[in-house]
Amino acid sequence: MKEDAPAGPDEGADLRACLGWGGTHLRDAGVDDPRREARLLMAHILGTDLAGLLARAQIDNFGRDAFAAAVRRRAAREPMAHITGRAGFWSLDLETSPATLIPRADSETLIEALLACRPDRAQVRSVLDLGTGTGCLLLAALSEYRAAWGVGVDIAPDAARLAARNARRAGLDDRCAMLAGDWAASIRGVFDVVFSNPPYIPQGDLAGLMPDVRDYEPARALDGGADGLDAYRALIDALPLLLAHDGVAVFEIGIGQERSMPALAERSGLEIVDIRADLVGIPRAVVMRHRQG
Image (tube, rainbow, N blue to C red):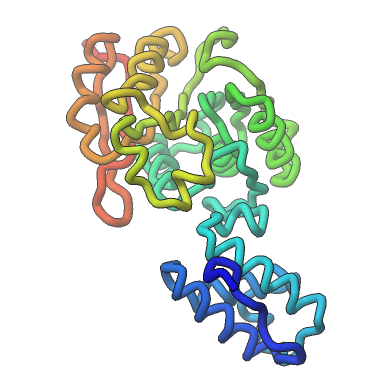
């Protein structure tokens, strides 16, 4: 039998034995933290959480087969969020799909940056999210700024539909609209906040990405052109017509791209007011506004 299609747990194996089998095969496939990932997959199959697994000892044949299939998918480096169909972001539980990037903790830095520069929750009344994907940034912002409304735009209709479902899932669909479109081409008006997590991986670096990302997430959401800055040039050029007088733009950036942002902002009459690092110290969120004075 091929190594990438391991036999399942022994018939009649209990839950603990199944988890041991799953952890071993995920470890052999090079998956980080394989024991935890095996438990997460088992919790998904059983419709419980990690704490709930402690109360379980047995699993039926259907559960064993479903768990084995999930382990095989993860061992092939399919992302966990594609297998479970969900991911957590900020305080939200979001539906995911191969149509969009998977929300990541790194991107929560953008919400932290916005809260730091706009601590008054009444100060933000309108939010635009360009390249919204799952809707994670827009919906997280709306969950914090309760008087705000928002618009999310994604070039992929499947992504816009997914974001709309997540808005309903979060109980925020009465305060936002999700649209399919090319960046801000169809948007009129100004916003207190403009978010974007655009494609920023230089083309030459795409082949070196982890297989979980390279082989399963949409290339259009990763490929930032020759230097990784193509989307930023288009977006920052559009910001002067999108930002309210005292508005802020909060963009995610890749490794080393903080060095390019000041010049891009300056040429559009903007200035950088903050660059915030993620939990491992990598500059991740850049905050821009209209140049003062």
